Image 1 (cartoon, rainbow, N blue to C red):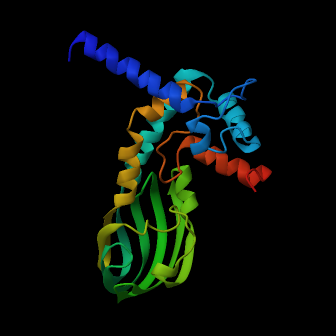
Image 2 (image 1 turned 90 degrees about the horizontal axis):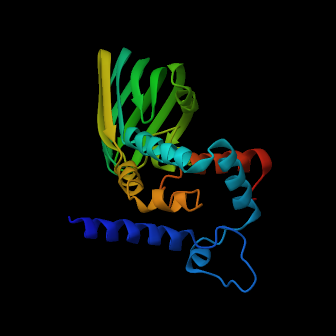
Image 3 (image 1 turned 180 degrees about the vertical axis):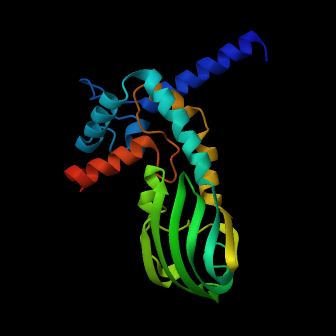
Length: 246
């Protein structure tokens, strides 16, 4: 690619960012609505302004946002895979390609060590499970022991049909699109799985337009399918603490 072509690419990307950032600030007299405002109706809402204000206080400047953008991409990559080894007692086998297509049975109680997406460490788990297809019954209890701070979001207890679990919190149970398998024999077990939805979230987040528009004042990345980036988590925190968005 020649120097001129590269210059056009950079200019085009920055122009796209400027257009997408649109009216992130309050409109001036005679300034009409933009496509950005129509696509993002919360752009100038009290909720959005408060989240933007606190985000900019914590992470001021383009340099800080660039660091956060790369950190979020790194964490999204870790979200794609789960893997662990376990020691305990019992037996079991499970293979699944989403919660709708799975088969297995077993009962197990022991200690696991490994990765649960972006969290890692050690946890205790007891589980009884059986079923075929969408008719898969689980009775599971999980208690974190040590590890990263976010591992302690994975404390979990549920009894019922797997497909009917309604928490909507990926930290609690695996993503419904997860593809993987697990097995426990006597005193040893292992589990590995990957999430297509988390993979899409990671790949979409790599599109550089999301980074460029943040240089122009739009704090939330455009592509955050799982709503787990730094800005989204701050937004959820303020919603819980201050009732924003209710």
